[in-house]
Length: 156
Image (tube, rainbow, N blue to C red; front, side, top):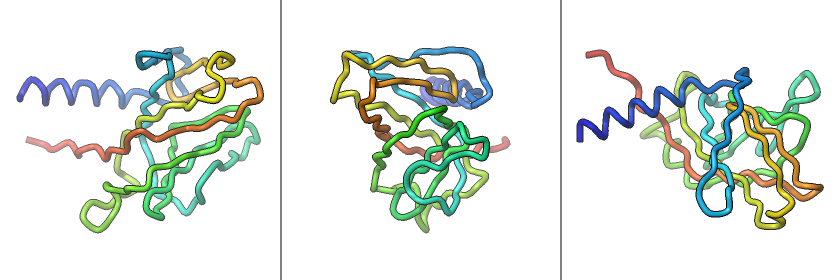
């Protein structure tokens, strides 16, 4: 049990290092057909509506996820030069009176792209924090696989 907890913390610390400004290219695939799983960190509660919001520079987009009518913008997830349709989970199990989400909280969202419409034409280049991709004119869908509020680190 202690080894599992240590491994969990080690993985969590490794994921915290991801940021939008990173230029190191990584490809993360999950078995079978090679659809990537992307872990997104660092979210804030904002009054955004569901979907995509364009940045001030006119090029980047940020993704807004809505769970149980609470809107969450992902600060460290940017998509350059394209538009995404967003599917979002509705359980909202980590948002509510018992376990609310605050601006200082760190969350982990695991997401993957649904290429079921035309997988053969899909080409993906992923970087830590950024995703650049083309689907030859096909629609692009981001599916949220999990939404987890990270435990706060406690001082001994």
